Length: 412
Image (cartoon, rainbow, N blue to C red; front, side, top):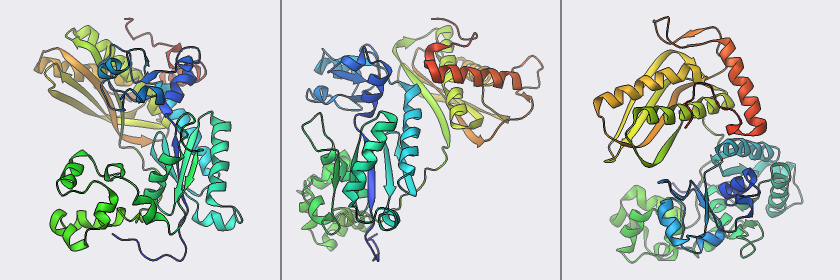
């Protein structure tokens, strides 16, 4: 829908962490990844994962996020490949948001490396006499000083314009902007008109093909098309949306992050795994990560789901909902192991991926002793086990996730 009339333009900023996972990898390993000019983050060179991020020097070889690492290595064989430092990802993202909240009343975490800020009211009450660009530079400096992470700031009167403005803001290792780019009120349509349709969020490859068949490649191509013709070609709702975004119109609000519906992780193996013992070992490591993340975020979970992707790419899953919510590896591990056994009994083929997730999340401290099964021999989550998990969290926070391993985890 077109934006309604406003008494004053909004002041929206988007903080975008520059090559976030590259920064994290270098922070986690300053002597290794920290010294690598050609760096790919996402997994080892032999893994079957995908590129999560890469340095700008690597991108010049055609490497892009989401590309299989095997292909990225062929394009840039001299690059160093490292896994995502997961223990830093959530923590640094939260640290950045906490800094942003000091500058704006409304902050929305769009992803681990992006957050929107609405400074409409504070520009008049707190930052009088300063431009939005001035405030953006101030915020950018505070984030880097307090978290060690560099961010670029895009600004404008809407989330759409801020998102688009952050691209020319990025320094790109000295070849781009100075870290801040703000589109002034009234300049939105002219700014967006310079872009290609592929650069607009929401216009994916399939939609681009549909538009290209009509000879529409640039934003200015769509702006020149009468509204009625857009509706005949695309339908009323899509035409209305495209008509507005092509003119920089976006009235979507900056909203606080919604509570997550689930938390999980998965692992794609370098080679297909047939062994039940190996699969269980990988599963338990994932359980350890998920339960650690649950505690870090202040959640407990009632439902555990295990999924397998077989060697023929068949994706299967099994889930169990418990009577009480859980937070520890000790409680989740037997449930996850039983779910894995169920999947393996139904179809015994080699697996290329395994994953575990926790859902039906609740906040708060879990009190009392939680029996997961009627069988007295089954695992229970006790206060002592929760205290042990909390102690392990403290050690890992200080020395890294891999500084401690649970005794029940088989060694590779």
